[in-house]
Figure 1 (cartoon, rainbow, N blue to C red):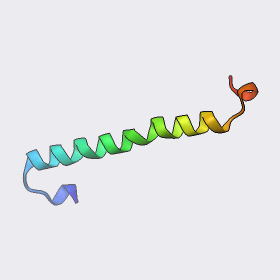
Figure 2: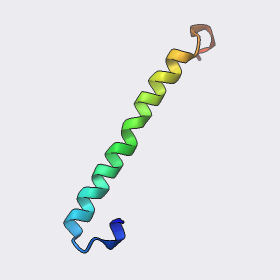
Figure 3: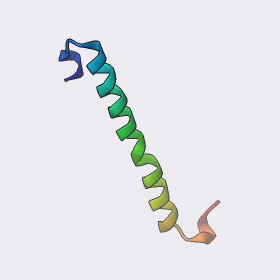
Length: 43
């Protein structure tokens, strides 16, 4: 979809929003995994 947008400014905005949304999931996943693993098994 991004390749079909003729305006470079819109492409940059969509790319930045995409990157932000992709990077939001990592801390949430890490927190979930750390809660699921018992304390004695954490390194």
